[in-house]
Length: 372
Image (cartoon, rainbow, N blue to C red; front, side, top):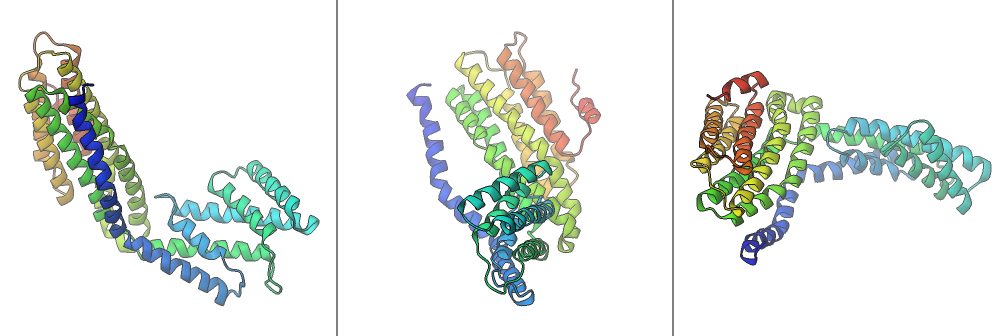
């Protein structure tokens, strides 16, 4: 790539770097519920284990709360089960071995090794196996206070209390499911529309550097896609489990149903930008009105975003998507190249992905996108 063409890419990287701290501040403002859950949950778990259950070293109760609260989106119920299962295995193995050989450096190494071996044979993996190993370490390394009760039973009960408190905090102080998934999806759709507009501008001006910039922007969206997918899993769980969010379940399901199709649309946008760049760099003929077809796609995305937020019927967005695909097919010259054909195909694929996201079936899409 020439130095001139590399300038937009450098500007994009600089802009992303400059925005990173602002993004972190914005994320912090949105996490007030998480901070509230963590502060109340850890305090509640420690209080219950210490004052209601009489545990003198109740450090693992708040730790278990944190583990469940910070667990992967959509996995908190499973995380609680794995947490208790892993702790049970760890405390059982640790207690049996310590009673037989005592505490010490080599005893700790043996306890951990035996715990992982037994846990693996029992089919434990991931978080469960990790908790089994750490539980056995704490039993072997931390000398219980006199009169503190059975350390194995205490550790297990602390894990149970902390896990239940963490899950309760998630349900009692739930995230705003519709607002959170809407923020993720709207941000993604806005960027996707901008990428398409830039790609259309590249064709209009026959400027390959603009297409390269659109491609770079599309590639940079992968973390945003992963964040959207994670949020979709989390809000689905919350809308299903928290009575405070049951009224939002139907709207949440509408958003969640679009996630995979939006991911596919972004992948198509990357290919579209790459093929546009290749066509322009090779000085191939630009298909007439192909830029208008891509602009129509960008407009359709804006309409789709509004319909999704307002729970509209998507009909206007669908008409715009079909028109974009029709224009792309009509724009192909008689002497097609591989790149021009690929551009038209990607416009159609993008339209199909968004029609899927709007609720169309495969047969309905084939019928609407079948042109003479």
